[in-house]
Image 1 (cartoon, helix red, strand yellow):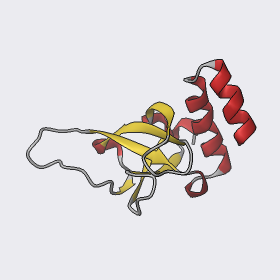
Image 2 (tube, one colour; image 1 turned 180 degrees about the vertical axis):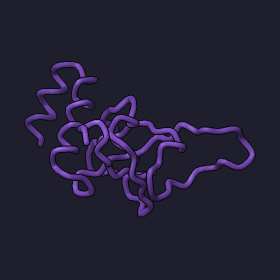
Image 3 (cartoon, helix red, strand yellow; image 1 turned 30 degrees about the vertical axis):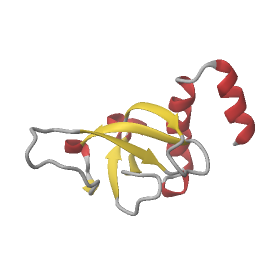
Image 4 (cartoon, helix red, strand yellow; image 1 turned 45 degrees about the horizontal axis):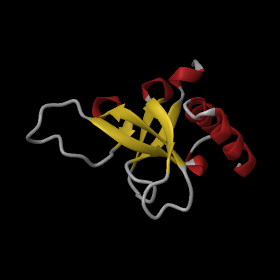
Length: 107
């Protein structure tokens, strides 16, 4: 299995309990975001509701044509260190250089 086929665990919200597994290659527009009341910035990205391999991220499929683009959160302790490192690298690549240095010091 290639790294891009690795499964990652995602959540609809940083403090939610419902999770889903998606392939790493299906996680798009990876970035850092600090949601309301979150203790720090967390990695987020977008998936299609059709890309969930297992689990469920609640969203409204009824009444609107799909597939739907969902914002998801990637929590470090729900994933292997290698997969999380790749996701964090992708998020870091979207930051301006000064912010990359600051996040590297905080990790």
